[in-house]
Structure formats: C-alpha cells, structure tokens
Length: 209
Image (cartoon, rainbow, N blue to C red):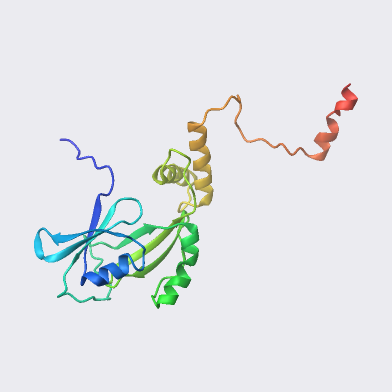
C-alpha cells in the first residue's frame, strides 16, 4: 500500500450564483484577478471562473444565472467546508476593519490567534472568509509550516495551551542555528552590556600598558 503524495493545493472550487456576483466579490472585494473563464465541462449550462488569490494557485467558481445568493451561513456539519482563509500582509490587515465597514460588510473584528491575527466575514453565498496575517516571517529557505511545527514542539514541551510569540521566536532561533553555520565555537546567548562592577574590575587598556 502506497501513499498518493500531494505537493500543495491545486485549486478550490466553490458553487456560486451569477457570474458578475462572483467577479464582484473575488476580484472586486478581495482583489483576485480573473485569469480564466470557460464553461463548466461537466455542465455546459454553468460557467467556470478561475481567480488567482496571489500565489499562483486558483480559486474557481461554478456560476449559474438561475441561482440567487443566499447570505445565510453555509452548513458546518461534518464533511462541509467551515471557512476559507487567505493570507494578507500586515499593511492590508491593518486596513481590513475600516474597508469592510466602508462597504457595510459585517465582520468579527480582529481575533488574536497567538501566531497570527484573523478577521472573519461572509461572502455573498454565506461562506465564511478569513483574512489571516502571520506574526512572523520564516527564515530564508524555510516555510511557515516548518516554523509552526517547531513552535508546536516547544509549546507541548513547556505545557502551554497554544502557540504564542515566544514559541515562534524560539523556533526561528533554533532553525536559524541549524541552517546557518558560524565560526564561533559557542553560540549560546551572551551579554555584551557588562554590569558596572564587572567593567570596573577589568583593567583599562591604559592601565595594562
């Protein structure tokens, strides 16, 4: 028995209503360019829109002019999609509350997730959308997942309830030490700001001459 190893999300497809509603939300609210537009090959009566969320992956939407939007919350029973989360920069996240308010879009307000900040609101179909902003940048050559996995280990080891910024900072330091060699024989933390008494006990350069 062998695995079917995946290497990332190829695309996510959603059921939408009218074509323009989908374009107005995914491109007009979230800024995702419409990059591909063709019929649904399994149902030619429907359209199939492809949007780029910013990382070259795809969010696609089946559209049908006979369907109307229902803003009621989509089902969250087992097997259903609870929400979709999209990565945004800190600069964009700081504007999210004001820009949602300007459009009259109800939202959750900023939620503290320990390793990121989040804000939630619904699309016109009632699907919960999350804008997520990480509180850390992974070391070069590493991913957010690698930092989170190391931070998780530290959290469990220390008996903490959830990942916090201290776990992230320590995880990044550990990964940097693994990835970046140094000529120094001792890379433990040091204090270059010596207390006054220690400085006084050390002969000055002039006194040693």
